[in-house]
Length: 341
Image (cartoon, rainbow, N blue to C red; front, top):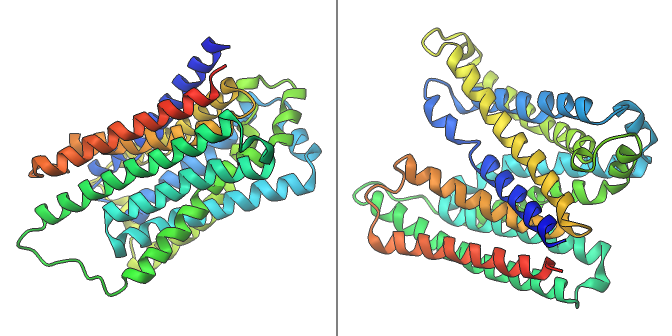
């Protein structure tokens, strides 16, 4: 059992690293606008790859979906669509309140809602057990780590913006509300996974391996999340007249490949996360989510260091950042202890 839990955590870590790395290729696609990159990413990571992988790993996929009850299919689809809206609100929120505070609020709510609410709804009797208490404690510790990261990011932004125009805080209240909504909606991707358990069981009965049995849920959920993302990209492409950017010879095929890689990294991380939660046992989807989110955050910060985003930051800002990362790993340790045999 201990070996299986260790393997599950390793997979969740790997999934978080892949997922947290998905935006790294975007920095090399400067000739494209955001909507060009995001549409290719969405097509690859939210539509094509999910169904290709699900078709290859879940025998009789069409039959699995047909046998799933209408209520479960509706929940998975609705939660997936809501998650897609959360992703769009993410960009709007951080534009109004700043990257540091926005990340802390959105990801903090996402990790908390995505783990504690399913536990409270599906297993309310477990809230007072060792596992429930340590999950709550670990989530509180994680929130403290996010506060340190927010302070670090805020100091870094202030130091790097010295002598330049300051951020307009006129819409701060609206921006904070958008961040809160983004965090709530973004957590619903894990809701789709948790409440789609019936579909996973049918996948198992059809011959899917336990490690791949969640792929039908992922495919349905993220393809529904594709809809609002694609709609917004198309709106921007029309508004900004950037359809022609796809044909820009200066970019070449490398840009299409780079944008495709973003989708592959993102969805690959999700599939590996699903494999990890299976190894963690009955509460894997609940316990694994905050761990997955923490590694996702840390990976993004590491890529920021590699990309020079922290160049010129003070030792104080770096100290807050490293402290925040350390607290996130402490939170992972607390949550892991609660899932130990």
